[in-house]
Amino acid sequence: METTGQLRRATLCAALCLAAFSATSGAAQPLFPSPFHVTREVDDPVSGKTRQSEEYYAADRVVSVAGDRTVIADYARGELTEIDRAKSTYSV
Image (tube, rainbow, N blue to C red; front, side, top):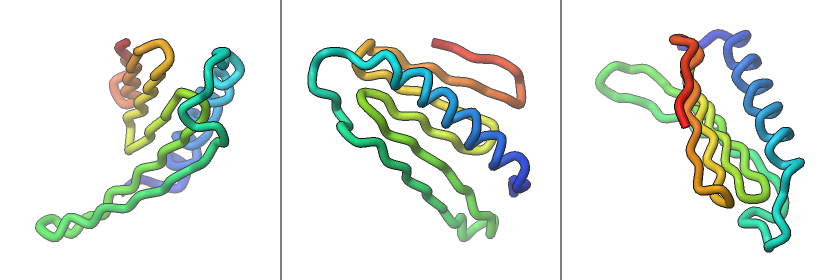
């Protein structure tokens, strides 16, 4: 289970990424005209663990944060960026 500090750090990272990407909005009608946030919790009955994920939607971008992984989907550019904070790696 993640600590509160890890969740805050992941949320801050996602919010900063979302703010940076939303500043470069295209001229076409955005996929998500008004930003919104979704929190999901999935209970695993076998292990008894609960996994929480945060998703932020704005313009043509979706930022998903689950554990040590952050995924940024930019539909306008057709790019998917994956960030693994535990391994300090990323891929586009």
